[in-house]
Every structure is written in C-alpha cells, then in structure tokens.
Image 1 (tube, rainbow, N blue to C red):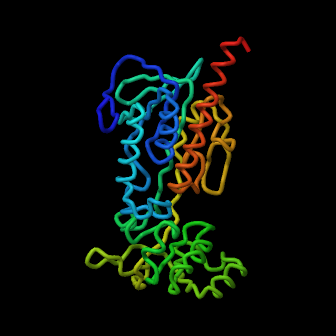
Image 2: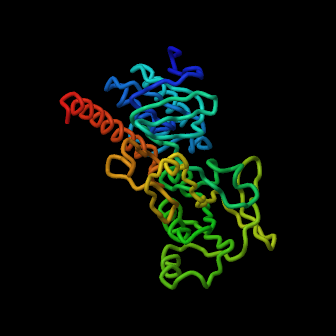
Image 3: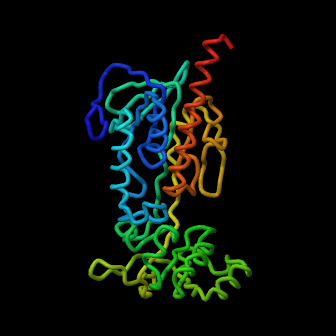
Length: 321
C-alpha cells in the first residue's frame, strides 16, 4: 500500500476483505471511509472514470461548493488511506456469490468479501448532435442546480430530447429570462396545451426544427444551428442526456431491478441494501437523482449499515443463533 493514496498493486492470489466497494466516487469513498473508521478490512476498486470529470467545479455541496471534482476525489482517497482502506485502480469484470462475494478484476486479481457495495454510477449518453460532447460540462450543460448560478442571465437554449425537456426549459427560467426551447425532433403538436400555456407564461420561446450542430467562436458557444442552416444566438445549451446506469454487477448477482423514467435501477431499502443479502448499491448506481452530496450520504448510510450487519452476524455466530 502506498502511503498517500492507499493504492495497491495487482496480485494473482485471492485476498479476503470484510467489504469490497466497487466505484471510487463520492458514494464509494464515503462508504469506505465509514467502514475504515469502524476498523473493517475494506477494499475500494476504482476504474477512474467519474461521471462529473467534464465539469470544472462541483456545486451545492455545503463546505465544498466550487471545489474541482478531481480535488474532491483526491481528498477522499487520502482520507480513506488514513484508516487503512486499500484502493486499487482496476475494473471489476466479473462477480460471483456463494458463502461470500468473489470479484474478478481486469488486471487478473481475485478478491472476496462478505459484503459488496456497488457504487459504479451511471454514464451520460448525449444526443448525436455535432459539437455537444466536446462542450459538455462547459457551456453545454444538463443540471441547472449544478451550473445555473455560474451561467445566470445568459441566453439559454434547451434541446428537446425527452418528455422531460419542457420541464427542463421551465426550470432553467429561474436562472435566465432569455430561454429558447429547440424542439429538435419533437413536433410542436406533440406538446400538450398545459405545456404550451406554461411555456408562454414563463416566456420561453419555442423553436421548431432539427438541431444539427453548434456555432462556436473563440472556444465559446455562440449559437445553435438548425437543419435549415439558420443559427439562433445562444450562450448556453441545456440538454438531458440519456442516463445509462452501470448496474451490470448487480444484474449478474440477481438483484431485483425496477423501471424508472430515467432507466433501470436496483430496488433498495433506505440503507441501500438490494434484494440480495450482503449486496448494496449507493450513489447513481441506485438512482438517477443522486448529486455528489446525496451520493456521499448514501455511501455513509450503507457503510454504517454494513458495519452493523457484520457485528451482529459475528455475535450471533458466537452464541450459536
């Protein structure tokens, strides 16, 4: 284990832990911090692909507002290392369950644990419009609570990609009085009367026509280009990426899943326990709307619950219950 990061080298033999956390974001590190402080032998497996990597700063986390995501994660890694938690930079490629959980890593290492926390988050799949991906997290944004203050009072556009796009357009009017909803591949007659009335009341301009690309000057968004080659001046474009939950490990272990408007997520109790004993989900692996502060809370809750489960399972075994 290295002194500063707790990172370990891959080994070929099987090692046993009390808990393994797959995913080294806010949820996974928070769970590991609680478990480390409870003196539980814990391993974090982190592939190093945080969802918020494109963002320069994270917002809305009390005492951490404005902190760069990379700095936040580095701080978390240093904290868990202080309590003896190991962290390996690797990817979990397979998982099994018998008396305990077996996790196979891409580097060839196999590790086992009595409890497994899946905190692998989700992936944002952007609409196939030229230029969106390159500017995502800068002036192409998805969450007004994450970025609205920083871009307030600029000319906003909202790209309609789902039934929630009208809701998104209405929400962002809290941060700008100049909002245009680009219907993209949505026909205007698909909007309900209530939606049209609300858009009009909020003074959101509805722009029909397919969006084909962005106009950029001096590395700044200046407009939205339509299929008819017209360009509408905009400084910020909000989109609603398709959320792709990273729940393969949960599915492989037979966890009960539930359909939501934002994707398929595991059914969990208030602590994060799935339908499989000893298998936990935290952060965006358990639901769509988990911001960094929420994910950290979910991880904390799961870590504390796991410690209690381990404690009473060992006590029951000792007294023959």
